[in-house]
Image (cartoon, rainbow, N blue to C red; front, side, top):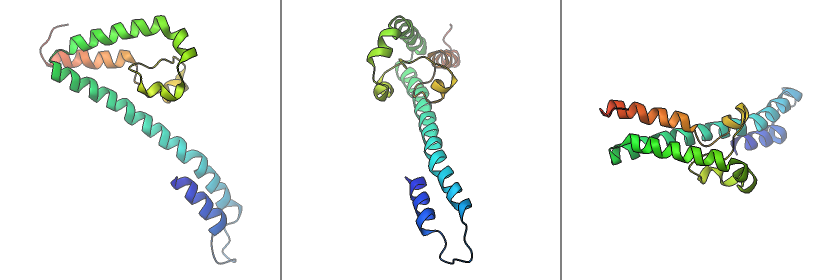
Length: 138
């Protein structure tokens, strides 16, 4: 929203003094800002979403007192998701993927960059680290 406001204010507002004139440079900068700012905001939003997943895992493990149980549950969910992935990719609306426990879409680097869910392997690894710190053997 801020990028769009800046774009339109630079395009139509610009400078009041005709002698200063920023000209085409200001327009190009405004267009770049209009394009890149929302992408940067979306990447930041996705990173926050992934960090919240890790925080939720940690809190759940601390409350239950059994991070290994949560790690095993994630492993089971991941195995089931791998079996159902072809069906899920056809039936899940990408707009609702953030509401699922696991990311139903598998993909390349770009897909992972814009994913709202961290990789399950990373979540399990962090839960195993927490189990070791809590004195549980794995």
